Length: 222
Image: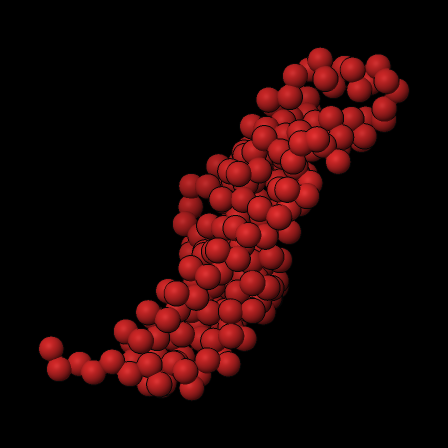
């Protein structure tokens, strides 16, 4: 093999990779925030006694979980403009990530909510707590504590899924890597470096989630 490794091109474009990494974090955190909001609101509707509220959530979860993320992001970016809804690549990526992650978050959170015994809920009402306080303090927080590992694993997966957003030219790490590779023709060096950066990103995310767990979900409850 006569190939000579040269990481010089990667080092020269390091600032670009750094900014793209920040772009990946931005997409990931925005997508996670939206996914968590969708998850919580979806669980409220999914666990209600109103069939009209439950049916759309069930359909939403089934459609999103059984279609590829790439198809979903293409639909938002290319199909919605036909109905007059035009979004830039960044907004499209955040919404697609939020919708995709939200569908999984609904089912994960629902599992935690349904694990809370009815006795605890009834005790909250007996103490005179408002319905919203019962859901927030007695149902949601213990449920999040129970499903936190599964939820954070899904969010780390969502962070890595940001790489698919390069398909619509959203500014993130993989899109920057493609530009650098096309300019330098150093495929091995570029993608080897990007692989290492994604490992660092995952490690950082796990560290952040571990800090949140110790701060908000450790015993005794705070």
